[in-house]
Image (cartoon, rainbow over all chains, first blue to last red):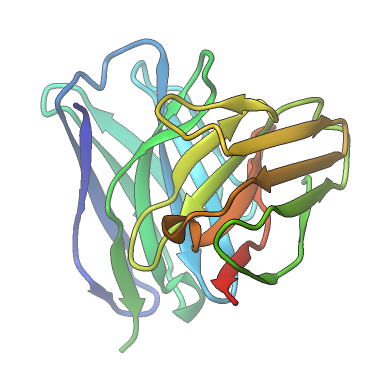
Length: 121
Length: 106
């Protein structure tokens, strides 16, 4: 059974870069039927889709974050990562990684447990 | 960007009740809408995909319908474990979620 696990710093200073990694176990990230996504959740924004990556490297981002977000994949480690630059307090949220199916049944069908990130000096 | 307007924001119900949540999309998303359940401190779980299809392992008391811009999600015969927050999501890019409906025990 596939499992995803987020890791990374819980506290980031304003203007710095938030970096998170999602480790995939119980299956290969290189499976062609899936995208690998990042979603965040805060009381202010609710659930917000940040973007996703396909194992070959194709990405898509939310337009409001596209200038600051970079999602990358490390197939050798079966991991994918999120970097969000120039963070502010508005980026404080619980960050989830998730698997998104490219074929029916469509949807975010496997999620990490989420990691809470606070932006504060 | 497509906005998903979900209502109500909260709902009180009893075990055995039938409840319905609606989501209105700001543009035509055909049937590209999913529904999720989230419990406190946990990640969302996929319940319904493509507006009306039950995801594997999800009890049949959960159902969805709709197309275009108007979607509904129904739970029949509410069970104690169903009290949670529910979200709709459309998956045209950029993907977006509704604001959520918190289902509470009356």
